[in-house]
Length: 478
Image 1 (tube, rainbow, N blue to C red):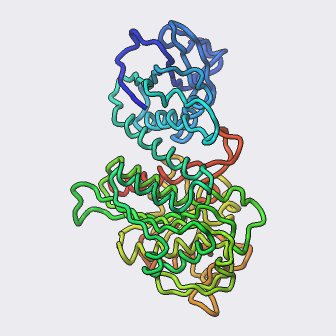
Image 2: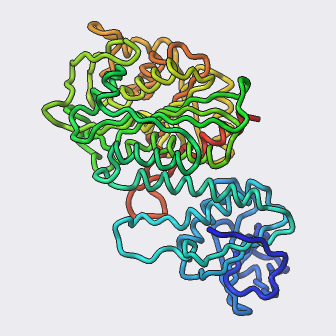
Image 3: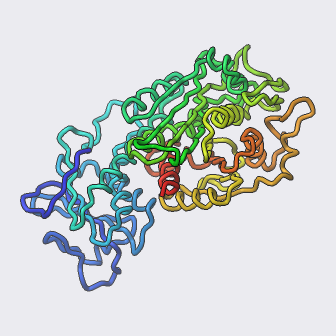
């Protein structure tokens, strides 16, 4: 998306986007802009409304924001306009920024516009969005300098669209190797290093829990390691570690799923969020070191599949009793966490995964579940989530839940076998592999990474986590 700045509308012809804060329905003063007057009986800026007027060879789209608006709502409003009013756009579009807009509101509006170009119909014959044409220009009309916010907004949306693609594409396209190749190409383009361990290299390294999950698939598992080092990094530069679950499809293994399997291409949404975050962190050139690991595997059914009651050995050296092969995400995350801690020793660690239906049962589709042993991280993650509309809420990691993962035959078991507290026992399992790291958090995003909304008829990706992780790291760097 190309952008430029306008000082005035002299000679402009095209589509004008005019955000309007709410007045009131019986206001005697009409909303006016560019010689166009709209009486309050017709439009007064109510949230989620818009009004279109054609005048001076231009379309004027007045966009209602309500009296106050949060980041997520503003982003959604502009995504809706771009997505559902695409016939109103040509090669010239001007966005009129209200004087009271903050840098964050400008960012939300423009990233929303760009997100509105995303189309779920990857395999349909259709025309691309007008915003994506080579001759398209988005002009910004503002009395304040907004170039930095505009640039940042486009980078955020670009990373989120890349993540939407990864999650929404089908599993016969997005295999573990596809993700490894994507990471390699993104690293070369945006500026981070990528190393991938295939089956033999992972076996040599001792990544037993990770490899057990992928044994039943013809698609070779890929253990993807990414490193971003900013310019002028030194011994005082903060170092953050990320781990994302990259299960490209989850049948449940031999404990095969009895419902909802059609949506299991989304089981790599945590890993996709890490991929998208790495792209965005590098694109924004944040002044932090980031090491990210995404263990990518397909949990399939085959004669080679791991079995319930197997005892496997993890990278940490701990043995794991397999109670349920559908509790596979925590196995790949366990090896990811152990490998990250032993080889890279980051100061802060966050893992993110579509891990349990239990988290959905607790929070529905409103927020992700947050588990952490560090109060500072807990507050910063919640604050960051609130700022960008990707909310989190904490659940306990009390030692009274330890018994859920105790095994008679091995050091630990991968599933409690109980129909309660599933998200907590999964988090306790992961905590076991953190070597008591003092600044670790686990995000269970099963309810917010893939779902229903106004932008498609079927369930689809949300890119939850991309902006959250990046914002957290931004705030940590301050």
